[in-house]
Each structure stands twice: as C-alpha cells, then as structure tokens.
Image 1 (cartoon, rainbow, N blue to C red):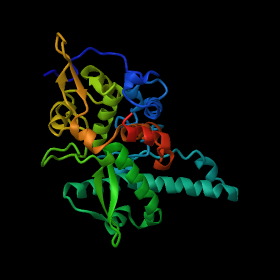
Image 2 (cartoon, rainbow, N blue to C red; image 1 turned 135 degrees about the vertical axis):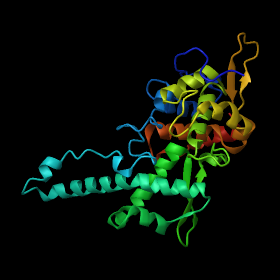
Image 3 (cartoon, one colour; image 1 turned 30 degrees about the vertical axis):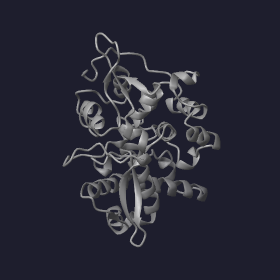
Length: 312
C-alpha cells in the first residue's frame, strides 16, 4: 500500500459547475461550492478546524480543552478605555455587560469541554449539577450560554453532539455527529474523539467525485495542519486513522488506482459511511464549519431533500 503524503504536491481541488465531476445533485452541488469557501479550496475552507484556533475563524471561540481555561480566546474589549472614565453614558452599560458575559463564557468553555470528554472516556453521563460545579457560582447565570457554546465547540472540534439523555436530572452524553457510530478512538486509547476529521475526509472524498486521490487528501489535510507521520494534538498520527482504523471500520476504502504505474492510491467511501450518513449531511457539516453558522440557518430545502431521497 502507498504511504500517506508520498505523492506529489498538487493544487487544491476546485468543484466546477459540472455535476458529473462531483457525482452529486443540483442542490448538493450548490452546497459543495458554499462549503469550499471563496477560493474553492476545501482545505483552506476548513482551516477553522484545529490549527485552527485563530481569532476570526469559526472556531475562534473554542478553546482547546487541553489548555488552561485562562488561555481561551477572548473578544478584545475595545471600549475598556472609555468605560473607565467617570460620567460614562448609561447607554454604554449594555455593551459593557455583554463584554463581561463574553469573558465569563470564554473562561469556562475549556473546563466544561474537559468534563464532557472525561465522562465520555468513562462512559458516564454528565449531570447538569456537575457542570454547574465546574462552571462555578460566579458564572451560573450564564450557564445556558456556556453550555450552548461548549456544545457547538464539541461538534465542530471533535464531531460530537451533546445529547440530553435524562431530562429529570438533565444528564448529557456525547454521541458522534450525523448518525455516525465510530469516534476514531482505539480501544483503551487516551485522547479525544476524532469524528470531526472523519467527516472532513468523507467530504473530501465526496467533492472529488466519490473517490479522492491520496495525494489530494494529504494536500487538503496539510492546509489544516494535519500531516502524515506527524503527531497531531487532537488526531494523533493521522495516517494510521486513514489507511487502517477507518478502513477496518468500513468508513472508507484505501485501494490502488487501476492501471497506475507507479502505484497510486485513492479513498472512496466505505459501506458503513453510506449506511450511516448521507452526502447532504456531510456537505451541511462542512458548510457549518466553514461559516460557523447555527443549525437553523442550514435547514435543508425541499429540493435538496428531494435530490437526496431520489439518490441524485
């Protein structure tokens, strides 16, 4: 088998207007162009994934759970100099209060993500009482906002949804997004779920007409700061995931391109990916990562749903 990253460096793939090049329907074609970003490069569109935590990206509000909460990205307080002056106008108070709330939220996000991930490892639900204890008394009024943003960060960073399982005590668990059932973690492995990277890879494959050349895959991941043979802070050594773990799990195949000499390899979707998720779901996820938009703004149109049902 080929070695990840061994192929030549190539330009980022761009989705053209021809449907046959992408293997997707009209509505999905529109979604794919939106998910790619303004320059048509999927890797650059996804640089809001973990390298990733830079101000201005869709994940700039998501602190790494491996870092102290005090180092979380915070919105700059542009009005700090004027707010210290005497006789400030009452109309400035709501803005100051909003900035204070943002600082509280950002300071607690990493702590909340850490307990959610810890309980995921121990296969235990996380109760609201436990989360409130982590958040602290000074931030309990902002808890709904903090939980909402922590849930968004878990989805975008790790590909995990925060799901309530017991309304009586408001207990929550983490589940893979989009109907997927594998988190990319080996049995007994220390680390974090890697479903977010799996969804990105399924999107790369989809946008290459249902089979992505290996060199293109590594080109895209390289733009995200993920390289074959290099340990990543979240994903570990990615080549093992791509060519072994997710192949064995049935989410993708890793096969030689017919007639290629020297041998080249490609990744198509595997049977488990087809069974558990859909093209539209993957494109919606990529679009959301690129734009950082809430679920409500990504509702599928009737036409898109019809394309999916008809298998276009």
